[in-house]
Amino acid sequence: CGWGVLLRGDECGEARECALDVSELKRVRFFPPYENDIVIAGQRTNAMGKLDIMPDLDAILVPIGGGGLIAGIATAAKAINPSIEIYGVESAHFNSMYARIKGVPPTFGSVTIADGIAVKEPGKLTSKIVAELVDDIFLVEEDEIEEAMILLLEIEKTLVEGAGAIGLAALKKNTELFQGKKVGLILCGGNVDPLTLTAIIDKGMVKAGRLVRLNVQMTDMPGSLSEVSRIFGECNANIDEVHFQRAFTLLPIQHVNVEFSLKTRDHQHVEDVILALSDHGFSASKV
Image (cartoon, rainbow, N blue to C red; front, side, top):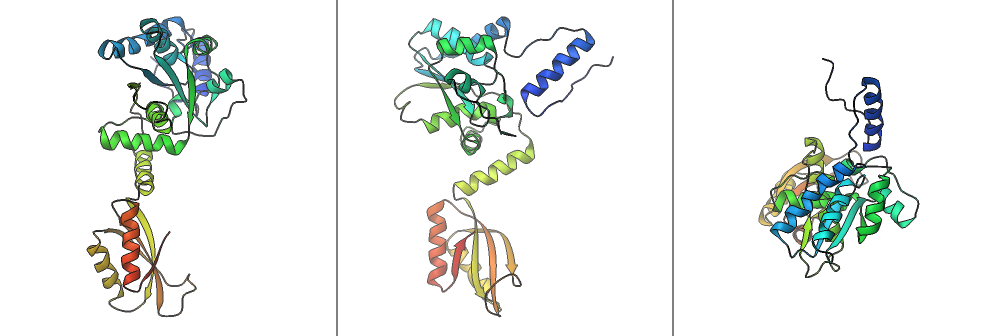
């Protein structure tokens, strides 16, 4: 019948413009994702459900795109408990609601891992509700969002896309503010490309000191590689990859740079491995 799913645009605003064009062309009704009373009313059920289970919540952290979700949650939560604190969270690369509420110029990057809330123009209706009911809006960086995704995956065994994990990123960034408080998070969406997820996991392991590249200088003679491998084994570091560099080096002839990718426990473990190599006469440095 000619209907299907159209994937258009690099961010939500571009997809919205396409949807408006299609609705006009096909003469069908356009249902806005956030700038609508009915949509906002539906989002209220999120807060109602949370406070029904945990009525003593002190605060809720909510991702912000166009503002529909936080408008609904803030309206319901404040009606149930006027003292509850509602905080919005945006990517620093797409801070449209933050900019509108704070009266500062917005910042728009080319991409963000939180692409589900990459909105350049928040709703007028939602902006009014946010200005009236939301206590503050936090901005988080891309690496902080990635770290939150890894924590949820590793500790909670839950796959959450960047837009959904952004609340945890803000919580970690503002621990002092929420110390001793009961905080509710909105963990929504698992739309993550497998290749993107793999890259995020690898970056997270590097940041945590669980994956490291070491450049080790050694003589290019039989037994040298075996000796270095033995040291790694004694230190309980697992070799992931090995790459020899003979030509592109300033080392004397019969010396070689060998780059190792290692699985380690943490940053201290990495330093212990480097020290063990040094004790056996090998110069090593992180790449």
